[in-house]
Length: 221
Image 1 (cartoon, helix red, strand yellow):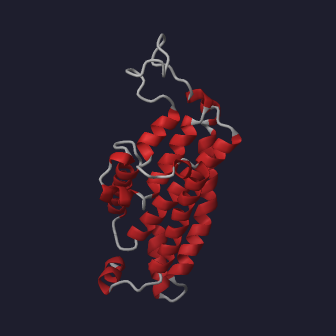
Image 2: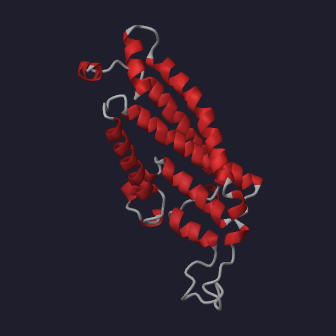
Image 3: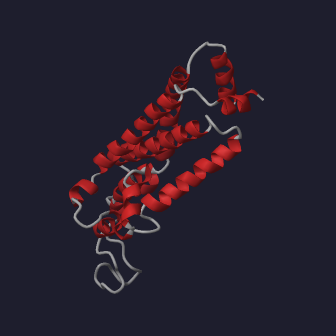
């Protein structure tokens, strides 16, 4: 809120434009969010026995997801005066994105065609797929038994998924898709980063556009 109020004040005074403000804010935010993400994920290293590669991939995925959510917030606060309203709106958008694209509530294979098309444009789809694959590839999660006496996949009636790859294929792939391309952590990480960079560029363009007089008047009050 304080950054935004100062921005609108100094923009009216002709000190700088929207693109310069967003660039400066992004350059300040990116290193701090990157460091905080690395520190946060490092807590999981001894718990999940993460190696350096898994730690780097997980940090990159969550960092890009944070940037995407931050940029959506920045875009909405350009027109929303109340920061609480902006936070609730972003939370709703994030939950809706997770519900459609994460594969947690409903597998992507069973989504209606139009919802599957929308999910392909959501960063949550690629972040969820990459994180799930990283988890399935961890030794700590391999060959998990059904209980203390029954091992999987010994009894198909009890063990729906023979292994983690079977789960990933059922939840995140559709008929006719190249499984090797879908189940690619590096590719999905790059897609997540591309979404984050794309939203930064989109916001830079939005902040170059003149605001309607009604919106300007709202922020002068």
